[in-house]
Amino acid sequence: METLLNIYNAYIVNILDILVLAIVFYRVILIIKGTVAIQIIVGVLFILGFKVIARNIFHLKALSWLLDSFWFAAVIIFAIIFQTEIRNVLARIGGQVWGLKAKIRDSYVTEIVEAVEDLSASMAGGLIAIENEIGLKNFAETGISLDANISKELLLSIFKNKLAPLHDGAVIIFNDKISAAGCLLPLNHDMSVKIFGTRHRAALGLSEVTDAVIIAVSEETGQVSVAYKGELNKDISPVRLRKIINTNGEALKSK
Image (cartoon, rainbow, N blue to C red):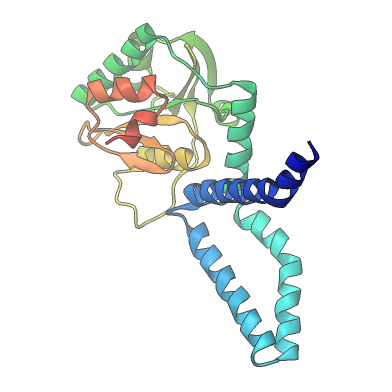
């Protein structure tokens, strides 16, 4: 037993330490990949390298002291800059711990897909957010609470009447219920993103701060798009849409 303990302390604990750190860094990189956060990290690494050179090679004491002082404020700066990413990570961990992943029964998935098909054919426009592990209660509270069973007719009555007060907002679905309609979603403000209009910016904006599957139907073209984890996927067929909903968005990884 003592020999095993010595082996653990000398080798295994170091391997585990490196493995855990590697997994943590890998997950962080996956989360911030393609965002402005990666550019900020590159800038931080540049400052760190500059500090090492200033202190150990050129022996610039004043500059080294100034760069050392920067790291005292770095924790607060990072917390502000990465607040969205930090919130997403903690929410996903909490959802996995408490088993909050949503699951919609097949009959209701059919109702959603058929409603989206009808909206696409009639170019009525629509915005449907399907909750996953990260709760959408804050966004649901901006609309009208329904707590109604999912039905094609109800979805069409909300979106096809362009004079209806709920037409321009989003419908939020959790499990087998339409929890709210007429909801306001956060907009994506990246002007370099080539997307159609406010619905698509809202879909992409919500996908950046939650893991929801957001379906957007264009009024101009009838095209069906799905936003998931910061990406907007266009020209989604009914068959693929059904698969996306059934897999909580994971089907989008295999394009």
